[in-house]
Length: 322
Length: 297
Image (cartoon, rainbow over all chains, first blue to last red; front, side):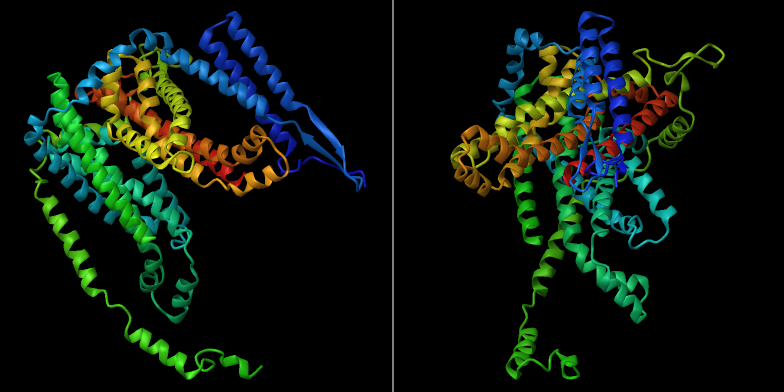
């Protein structure tokens, strides 16, 4: 009856817990020493980290009423906390964090901000056209991107597509698309297709496609496949059964993701002009170059109002959909 | 048992069957509404199509596209590894000079870590003040508008405002991110606070707990996992944002990347891009794993 089990209450093996504690301790000491060199502070922190690591190794044996002995590993929270401290110190070192600088020069922060909050309404007529461009770019980009995303997300969901290799290549491709920042895509598009709204639209299409596809294949995997199987057993083709059994289930989610993507895209489209892809960003870049921060304030105010309207409309529609 | 087999329509009384049929026949016909929606969407698309006119490739478009492709296939390895003049890899193997990809990536991650952490801490008081379950409605409304303001100003503009204070360096990226993360983090914190089950407080009250104990055992266990999960999610986004903040000079890999793009050094662009893609994939996997563990408890 005195059989030892090497599992703790949550089923984690003790060996795995020890290994992760050791790795965390080594990482923490490495961070502390690499960020500050061999100084009193870094050595002190390293010693503390090692102590926390040792604490995480200390296990406790317990005897249950049925005679079984189990091992309860100590909490790893101390070593996780110490690792976090080490990482924060290393990051502060790497970025040149200096809180005193903010205290000393903090008043400079309000110089531009004050002017931004006094928008120059004379400038409004010049804002209208780029603002409309931004809205048009984001609507067209969202529609095309979301339309392209639907078939791809069906292919990338495991419950409809039985072929594992196709599913995983799709997913890796989508992941790579999502990792590219929108501004970098816009920069490439502006170089390839020339400056202007077309480049911006391409960037938004790529961005929307990546995001909506991912959200869609995740929600397609949660739908009820019973109706789909039933239709297949009647002799419907895969497409017919998908269209009648799955589409009604995923359509509301899909539409609400499209609206959500539109919300994000308005904000994203506003800065694309920074790299020459048309819209409000062009104007922002120009105003900043001229140091006309009141004009910039007008641009931002216009954007604020549009974002407010579109967000509220879309949230209302999304509530209706769900 | 035989009789029970047809418990379907036959088991219903006549009136109910009639009701089903009439309900079906008099169901709301919304075809005019669907047509209206389709018309509106079609009008919006055609309206937005007017701004976007395809003028063909730029004069050097094909060349640039080829350059990007070849750069991704043949990245400049000297940015990743230490090499001597003949292209042989020498110790200490990984290029840790400030121009190298590993250093730039580390700096980008460092900016995101500190920015997210400070933003996550600053967002706590704001989110309690903007939640109408905690404070009066008008106070919550004021803070909600304030949060929306923070969210609407693009991060590039925030960076510009902060550059006057800190100068163009990585520290500027940190303060920029700590301010512009507040908006989204607050929005998700507020949802977490609104979902708190307050009946637990009553039962703690009944068992004689004091105020501190009520917060410690009644509220914190409910909101802390949500808060941590939000911060990790935002960290994911901030790493991606930090790569673009460099465009206005706020540190991170963006500055070097845009410089290489404008001067058409495609092999260097390839090295930076590959580094970024790898980093983002690792961070996304990490954050998904940690968040799913937090959700399961």
